[in-house]
Length: 322
Image (cartoon, rainbow, N blue to C red; front, top):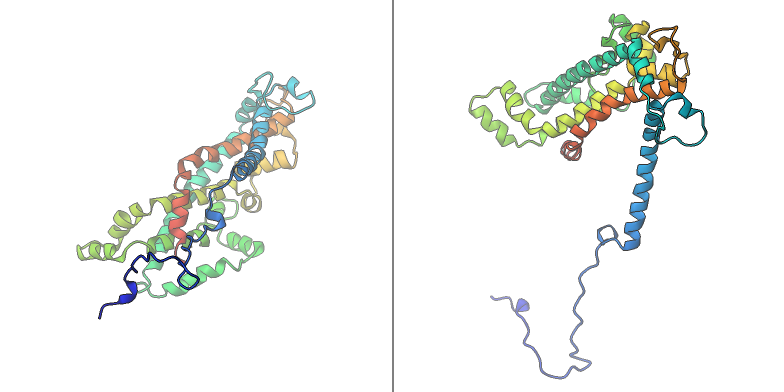
């Protein structure tokens, strides 16, 4: 039986009366507030807020760079210094020829590179094994243990005793091994692996591929974005970490650059150890402090733009599933 309710009604030529007056056409629903096209005032307000944020971020960086490149006489005057009147690299020559900052910079680079590689290897292997809940017995229990570390922490003293008992005290491995696997990064990588289609992995197994081949040739190439982002997380954490070095390293010759920065810039320790020749007059302490700050910040700023394009895709891919 045909449905007569959907047939269009014939157009009536009779004059509308109060009984047969046509109903007004329903207007399309209005857009939500966040989907509406912004007005000129809203666009101007957004631009103003973004300009203020950019100024607040860029001003300290420009000031630090300008002071580190200024001659001594330029710092004698009052006021803001955003462009050096007389350029000078004397502060950079002093800290790089002294040996302390150069050695600390090399230590930081080695710890960051080795630590990031080790952390990524352990994170990828653990995350892939945790996705095979049927094949790997106890993987669900291990996953719950990992999630538990995000809520509860052992504390500083148990961590120090663990490092001491394992013989890692006063060695570079004390900066790498205790934080080799981060629970948040592990969950992000595991979720990214679980979003890969199971049919793709099953077809590879039918063709005779083993788990190592599947991981190396299929899973890792399809997860480049999230792996790049997680690698940046590990690298930034290792590069910025000074607390572990302050606790675990007793030898000052093994200090990373962040601990040197803390001692000579934040705590105001004497800068004479940074000089290559004690008899040579040092530049002003302010220029040396700013030069150390630039040297400690510049490497990670250089790496960041190469990974920034993976940020949105990598985080979304790893965070869609809970």
